[in-house]
Length: 424
Image (tube, rainbow, N blue to C red; front, side):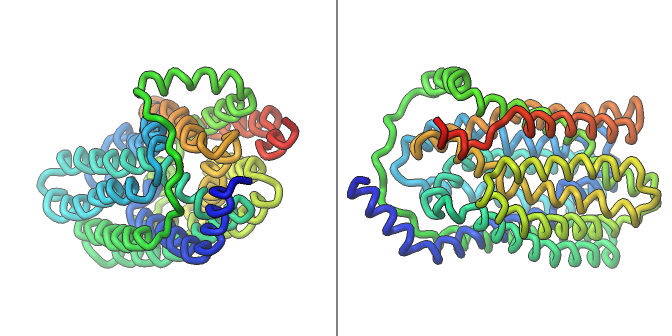
């Protein structure tokens, strides 16, 4: 081990508590803010209020997922050429947070008189916040990887997620109360204002992070030259390519998730304020999942955590098909929450494990996120179109089948990357 590596390890251990608290608070507060504007509950209900057609409701998760996923690879090469990460993240993340006060103002000032304009602005703001977030994901994950050792990284994300879940429970209670007591669309303006406050606090927590000494950066290359490397990586790392394939199939299974709340409102007699209850159920599922999956991931690897989450997604689809009432439908969101916990703990962490060296971590995070963009974007849109043609229940059935297929691929065709790396 070189003197530089020894100094870096000493810095990490010296600042581990502070950085775990700061980065954990950043993550937890960000997740809490997203609960005030949940893509599974609050945003579909707001779109329904505005008279959105099914394809627009399906576009909500599509726009958000493509924003989270697509830009990562195109920013990863630039990230690798930076000697530090924190300054880059701080410079750009403010634009990840500005859309939430814009949504609050749109709901307050535009929704009554210009619902179509409000819908368009909502989709634009969601694309803006998620695109900046996707661009920053390789840098933020590498910042976490530099600050939090592998031995505790699963539990770190679990703890940060639980903080977000507890904050989200409070946010869910607040949204349920607001939606039941305040007339729409002012109620939604208040929900988006709550998201704004959480995003501002998250920004402050991130600023408290202590990053280690600058490292020798990779030489800057053109985007074309950088992207030309990707096919070789996928050819040589067959296990990683198989993992990406399994996750693509699982993402196809997300096509019905944006219609769970809509189905409960339209078919099962749920009231608008039940959207807050569904958010709470999903957060309870996340808390339960995080408690177990963080420990499981550190002990047995992140593949098993993701297998558990995909199984929970399949159970959510089955439950949606058989639930006789909106009270029973709550379990759909509990299972969704368990899947969200597996994603929070393991979806990006497993990419760090696949990376053969620390300097290649941004590239693996970039590939892993961007590869999912087509399915993440097209599956929910296809779901919205299929709802118009065949109805919501057939879309639930198709989503469940796709999730089960992805689960089988992940279980039988992908090796745990830690074990694979140890055997190489």
